Length: 276
Image (tube, rainbow, N blue to C red; front, side, top):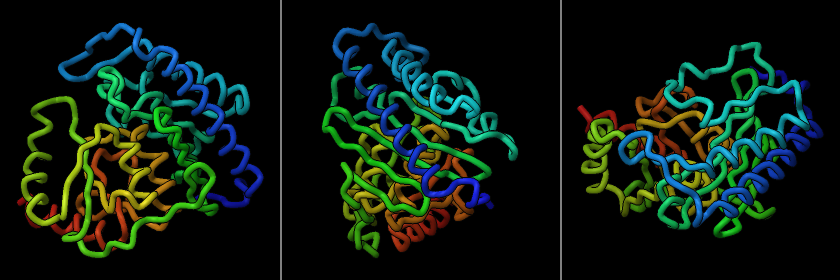
């Protein structure tokens, strides 16, 4: 467990404010590039733009100028690595885990569902989470033990307790062959839940769970920069997270289920039973 004395309220607030400033700076870079960037394609349906790199560089400079002894892991630095390969060592300094543009395909097509996601990880715990949606000017923020907020107003998960009344969200990987498992899960869950959504941004899906807009989220192919910030938000808003087989949440595993405590548990049970 984390040494809470090493991260008192003042330190957590300093981390949180730095993350907020960095998220806004990164998002401003995205908006400057929007509509005029050139698209490069690394692989089918997996777009990367100069905007990704520009946003990440600004975020990195903002954070490491404030905390030069911290570690920075950005999506653009970790291309081709598995989630397990980027796990910080147990004795690593506080580590910023950043997606400078979550929802790249949406951004490339000018669909206004994308964000900057910044999480802080240390000693096996997610401490700070900031997700900023520049198109809707929505800033989701949370620090361990301090609650979750949307534009400085407190947020909580929904009161939904039954999956039959729940709106669920999911995410699909770019690789078609990896999509097949989740297509099977979609087929099963669509017959149980009230409705399903795929918005193209894992980070925003988790932020929406924290804000009570979605009641649950599941996916099999996440990366740490997709989920660390959102995990803090969900937890601080009263939600729970686990792996798809019901093990404790681990952002360095690719599978995740989040939601209100009852809905999260029901999704896990349905996935375990119906995916056989």
